[in-house]
Length: 324
Ligand code: HEM
Ligand SMILES: *[C@@H]1O[C@H](CO)[C@@H](O)[C@H](O)[C@H]1NC(C)=O
Ligand SMILES: *[C@@H]1O[C@H](CO)[C@@H](O)[C@H](O)[C@H]1NC(C)=O
Image (cartoon, rainbow, N blue to C red; front, side):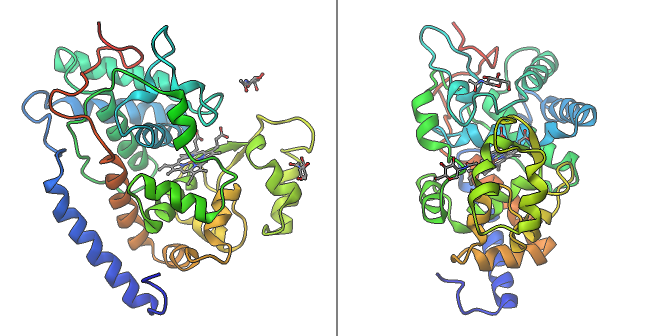
């Protein structure tokens, strides 16, 4: 790996440089930040208001909305397909293994859509763009970095549970499989570490970390013991534990925890388990500025995955249904 053998200071400088390059290049993307400036200047403030309100009512909602953008983008691109409900012709992604009984926040997305369409005087802003902006505003609402969201995505008219099952990584994956999954989405090891650090927010159900706390060895024993009361060996599958010690504020504690072998999910600890992402985890666990700015860059990169643009797809009137 390219970063091996470099002193950390050099690495951090190199990383900052690559961030600058990426920012410059993003203007060549088909998406651009001022897409709605003429057609609906009130759109972005309207989204922000609803997100901030929802997060104030329930801090976890920041995590839940951020995750929706990820689960949308990893399945045939950031096209709002995740939001479609089951019909005769829609095989809803909400029924996939990663989403069923797990993804949440769909009602807040409905609230946002209603507010945005009211202020725009019609369906101007796509549901895919709403997810991208809501993810940014969610991170901002809990003390995270902010960034300019690339806009102009259009909404899919189809969804695929099969594609969701094939593309959203399950938590039992090891590092090579995680790297491979991210590569398939145009994302590298650095993006994997940074975007996984979204797990500095929110919660996971016992079902997803039971095997880790009862069977795995690469875990701080006191941490495993502590989790067992909320996650018994039999039952309790939907009991929640925070993904890091501060699930409602954006910080580096997910990363410092990994260094202490206190990752909650197998896929979390896999990032710091003797493999070649260890060094990245260490660097970002120490350098808050680099973590915040590079997290933002990776979010932009994820948001650029395979969007529908131009006359592809549609601007949905209801995020849960295709237009007819
Ligand atoms: C690297 C592979 C990843 C795996 C295997 C994974 C897996 C999981 C699992 C199993 C949960 C708990 C779900 C539940 O208990 O219902 C979860 C929660 C979460 N994930 Fe991931 N995830 C990954 C990457 C990401 C990325 C890239 C993001 C966003 C950029 C993200 C954001 C979140 C958030 C914010 C939560 C908490 C949601 C809430 O509390 O509602 N995850 N993830
Ligand atoms: C979803 O969770 C509920 C409550 O924990 C549980 O009763 C139900 O069986 C779960 N459904 C699926 C499909 O896993
Ligand atoms: C621990 O591993 C064994 C063997 O793979 C498995 O049968 C068992 O279900 C695991 N226990 C938990 C709590 O996941």
